Image (cartoon, rainbow, N blue to C red; front, side):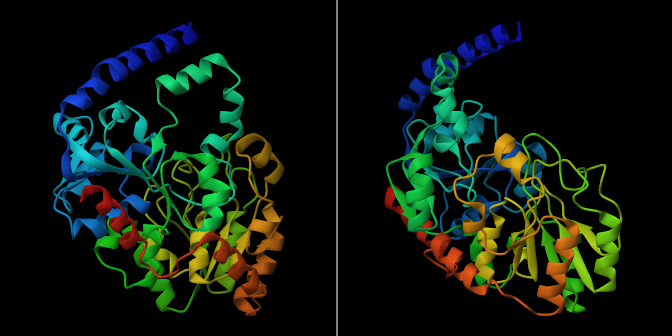
Length: 405
């Protein structure tokens, strides 16, 4: 019964999209310099590449709109940027039909009929990270679905894998090894990521919009008191679980170690990870809101600890030590996400397999000052980034203006 209901809903969605909204997009004339930014993860959050590119261009272009599908987000961002609109609304539908360019950084922008409303717009896909996961057209799930009739039909009716007019990359390596395989696009441009521009300049008040201000201020305070700061940023597991629930991280032991060595751990979990029952109040561990932007705080971290998250690639631009703790490696690569490259080859730091190993490496790197992975970081960073100058937003803005001018 559920399958029948789902298939009926797909047909209804397709009829509204392909037979009503798409023809409507041909009837509404485009406004040449109108640009719509579609909010990112969950309900159109104002963070990541979308946030930093919008802020850069908002100072220079009058006809920019930020679209979110979260009422809370709408109310918050509207205080700072008047041209924030809520979707769905009459105004948002009209903006999408009229805009010449739409800027996105996730694949969910297509949902809720937005693909059809934007059918005649030029789509600029920023994407949200480079690392080693297989994504989109290169993912095993997509390849497997191509062998099945109904998944293929669903992909067509929902327009799950659209073609982009401009696709943003960070380097020739990732253009060839990731983006050209994972997406259909007319043009791939190697510009770097707007969210990394903040590493190369002074932080502004605008940068702190949609940041965890309480945690951010604590970070500054501990930094001023000469604590060593460690960011722990594990990725999301699609099959569920997290390092605390699995027992890979013992919070009390970690906190005691940090307290004895003047360290502060900043825990920033993935946006989709639910940790509400596990956030203990500890003296030397702070919990950065996982739905808010961490990037303005990255420059204050002395070490990054992660597993499979692409945040480590961005952190390479700061030229600071990285540790990896893939405590569930076999499960992750077989049940959660397939990876594209050899893990040891593409990572740029020591790989730990237990909390004991982890603490030994932190002691060696931060307390004893023995950083032996500098050359490896340089090698991986050179693969990942053509530019290391804080001008990604400028380059992307220039590409967009080629379309609107």
